[in-house]
Image (spheres, rainbow, N blue to C red):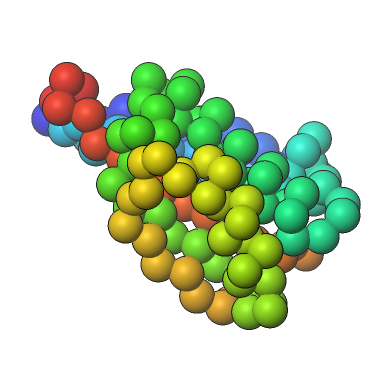
Length: 129
C-alpha cells in the first residue's frame, strides 16, 4: 500500500512549522485534516457564514489537489465554537453538499485558533486504490 502525504512540512501563521499533513491518501482513501477559514495566514472576517464558506472551500481545494471531488466524500466532521451558529452553518453547508450529502458529525468545541468553525473529511475513490 502506498501512502501519499499532501502538504507535509508546510508552515502556518507566523512561519511556524505544522506537524501534520493537509491530507493523507492510502488505498483509495483520502483523509483531509481540519480546515478553518484561513486566507494568507489570517481568519476571514464577517462571522459564521463567510467563515463556513472559506473553511469548506479550503477543504475542497485539498480534495481537488489530490484528485478527488465533493462527490467522493464519505464523511465530514464539523466543530462549531458556538452552537447558536448551527443553522447558519447548515445553510452554507447545504449549498455545497445538498446533492451529495455525506455522513456527518457536528459538535460544539472550543477552537485552537480564533475561528468559529473547523471542518474535515474522509473521501474514497476505488480508482485510486
